[in-house]
Image 1 (cartoon, one colour):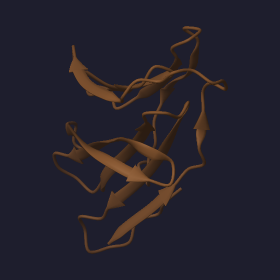
Image 2 (cartoon, helix red, strand yellow; image 1 turned 45 degrees about the horizontal axis):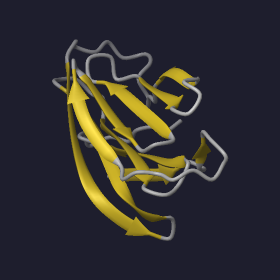
Image 3 (cartoon, one colour; image 1 turned 30 degrees about the horizontal axis):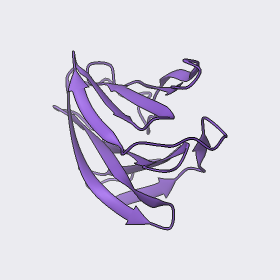
Length: 142
């Protein structure tokens, strides 16, 4: 079973700036996707992410994460986090989508996907989340 939803656009900067193409990279256990206006960074160790307005240097949000039905169960420790990118073209323009996949090494937790799309000529990001149920019983999206 797969559950998917998209969040509203996340504006980090308003203005008309000449923007560069979107880039994605990994350094010191952190994966970043950015254009000239904004950067979103995901920590592969903790699973938390942050957003920065690059024109002002202001951190718009930090220590963000999403969870699903993760309280009440004793879980074995350990999670594997991987990432990939793909080029995209849609109604917002050309850009890249960074997909981060968090797979529990054991236990009942579902596989979580965080999707971050940034566009070449846009000062915002689009975030989406999805989960894959690995078990035969239902999970509760929150």
